[in-house]
Image 1: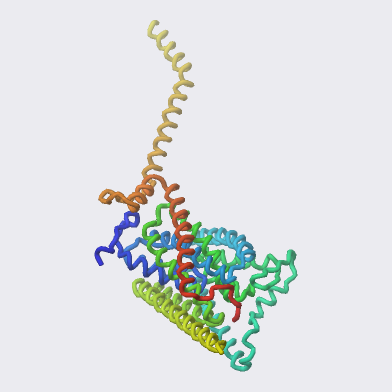
Image 2 (image 1 turned 120 degrees about the vertical axis):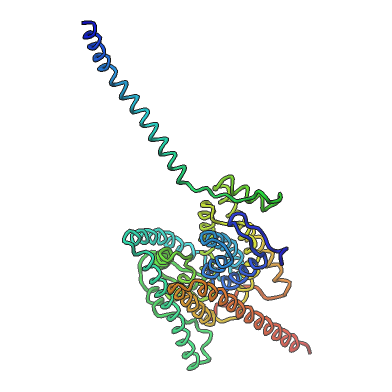
Length: 343
Length: 111
């Protein structure tokens, strides 16, 4: 094992290369499956293993850009990336990030930043997790009442109402199969960007449900389109943190090697899982992240980091199991179909 | 008398010299201010240095050297390496997946 220990001169620490590969693979699986960056797993994980916090954040952002390229390539081949929608949202996101940064400065001037941000984070995670879980239960009840109606796309009422607002220019997003005012994705991007900026996170876990429940995207398109945005955020974050000297490129390269494999696994797994199952797993993940932030709030930093790392590994394990199960089912069906054709 | 004349000459000299003195004072004090400002800015700036002294020549040492040379070059290197690795690994792992003979065509967006 000592042979695999590498010296990271920029972060000023030593780390096992296998561990970096494992962290990368774990976050890659979750990122490819949910369409998120996964900073909430990587940052505490690197920090536990000796990375100073600014280097953990910078290194995570840098590898996030590369990992999202891998996952976006796969999702675009699946037809899950709505480029028009991604660009429209990005315009709002950029403005939102600036707005959020200004809000943080204002809070800082009043000495409220730290406590307020942590509280907003806890409330937000709880609300998102609860709503996604509530929506899943509602869907499950509806399915139980009329099991034959599985092919019909289910959209949140709020999204449908927002789509009906006739504010020119009206645009059709063909991949998402929605028609709405261009201002809808721009405004959703603005709000999610501002929230992400205030919370100091990439924002994937806010944007993905926002794309589903506010814009009205199918789950898989929300995952793919959000990954495109994470790719841009990661590249920008990698550059700006690199400029400040807070990225350990060697560590990021090792993590990316693991994350590339993980991201493919996570992205391919969506093929075998229904949209609502992705939402259910996402809600569970959000609740774990919520518990972790709560633990941090009561100053149980180490426990919080261990919880999030263990949960990340467990969730990727579930995703890999779903992938293997789906692949085996597909093979059996293909074999059965081939057997049926032979005279 | 001579003393008085000398004194008058001195006063007159001082009178003529005050713009020069003021200019000298301004130059010195501005220069001192500038030096002081540069000194404090220099002192306040934190240099990031990667300790690559014991490292053998290779990619790791090269990365550390770029880091120590220029922050701009390093930032560009970070983005370029991540993007290139992302593209190569993306297409590489995609090829590997095809060996599993999975159907990787467009998906039906079922919920």
